[in-house]
Amino acid sequence: MKVRFNVNGEAVEVEARADEMLLDVLRGELDLTSVRYTCGVGVCGACTALVDGEPISTCILLALLAEGKEVTTVEGLGGDHPIQRAFAEAEAFQCGYCTPGMILTAKRLLEEDPEPKEEKIRTYMSGNLCRCGCYAKIEDAVNLAASASKTAAPIKGGA
Ligand code: FES
Ligand code: FES
Image (cartoon, rainbow, N blue to C red; front, side):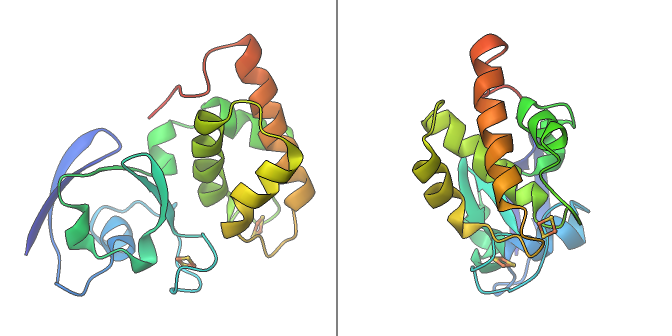
């Protein structure tokens, strides 16, 4: 079946089976490899994309349900988004496998709450797991991005 939606600001039309998940379409059809397969059951957050602005585990979202939606992956942030810079500056990763999902979840968090408290950051980011255990630095990165947004362009910048 054909599915039409926007990815990182561009309209796409892809063929998807009725049982195919959005993750497989993003990686397999559209070559967006920042969305990653790990648990496959909506637990780890490695496959996170923003769907109409909300962080979604794409391993459990049927591709057909993306019809007409706006999907953002970390490729759509362009590489120099304030949150990407904050993650780099805070060295908030080791292997980097979880990082795209973390960045997208942090983006939504900072849109909702530009100055989140420690507890809120931990709760909000708890659906994204880091097997390298970089949680303290990830929290630092979110705080850094929040501070940067007070003095520079709004954190909503980018896709
Ligand atoms: S691969 Fe989707 S949540 Fe783990
Ligand atoms: S940096 Fe390796 S999984 Fe998070």
